Amino acid sequence: MMKEENVAKAIGHPGVMIASDGVPFVDGTGHPRGAGTYARILGRYVREQRVLGLMDALSRMTILPARRLERHVPMMARKGRIAVGADADLTLFDPATVVDRSTFDQPTLTSTGIPHVLVAGSFVVRDGRLVSGALPGRAVRAPLAQR
Image (cartoon, rainbow, N blue to C red):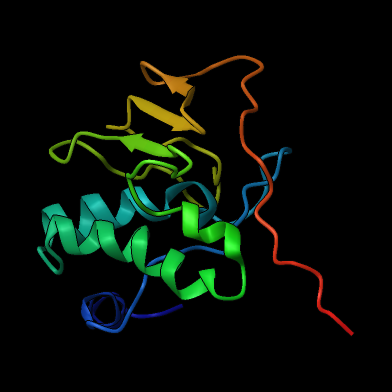
């Protein structure tokens, strides 16, 4: 619905973090941003259009959202960073080839240029393929409000 030039301006603004509320559903319906948000940023807005530098884009996708949420969701203090005690959620990608492929007709198409994804230090994608039965993640939840 937004014009591409406005999307690029918004993404390039220094106060913008990158995240997605798009969820690809199991039956193949949903919004393409559920599967393609981060690869789109890296492929289109970093590599092709140079709206952002790579390290700036990575911080907007990782440490900045984690820091924004960690006061209310303490588990986020273990996210968005590579450090001793962090959760070891890592996406290994090739900056020269990473690109989204998801569309409104096929919203769950996987991105290319992402050979490995680790969650809690365990492979969930290895050599570009889902690892069968790999479910190492834990839900990230805010504590219940005290009354």
